[in-house]
Length: 277
Image (cartoon, rainbow, N blue to C red; front, side, top):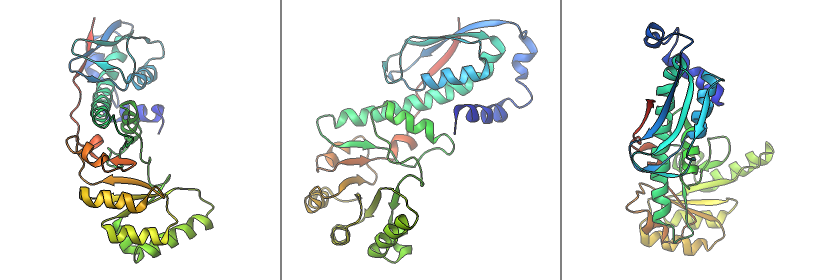
């Protein structure tokens, strides 16, 4: 989805035939100025998106940017000043705030995960546990916070999870069928497969033909054993209820990646405000 498409949908949802609050009391030719005020410490994200959103509402808008996406911010900081037609500023205000507050929350939490394991080579991954239709914004926020995107959707990587394996008739059939499918359709996609215990890890190692092995809900002891068994032959990813308080203990087991749905589904919006000046 492009920003243009996104803004069009947002206008249809929120404004429809008109922002009657602004239309009722503010002349169409009136111009105003506002500032984006930070009211909570964190990592700012969504400034570049905000700039594009404002431009979609009013291409004459003047945007004075003071800080950049990914910068640490504290209470009282000003991210940018914006000047344009007052009606347009008011119509775009809530959309910009909703997006920036959520993106900043995701970037802030992701950065905490990244800092927590900063002395280790393990990388932090997001998941597909995102809000429908704004995944592109949420995953961008993860990157701004220092994390990595796992995959954008079902189309850009093969992920054989427990249900795929069970419906396919087992690990071996799932892997062999997938490799044949990719060959038949001339698709060059990485294959990741989920394992639930050490026996399944051993079976995947016997069959091969994958790129990454997910170790789902493994104990720390079994995770270390699995990493030793895999021995660098395939990428490794730990997953399953991993939180900020536990991420380092998983990373210390030697996995290449730790994925956490909490990055996008368990955040509280960073407090930001757009104020007239």
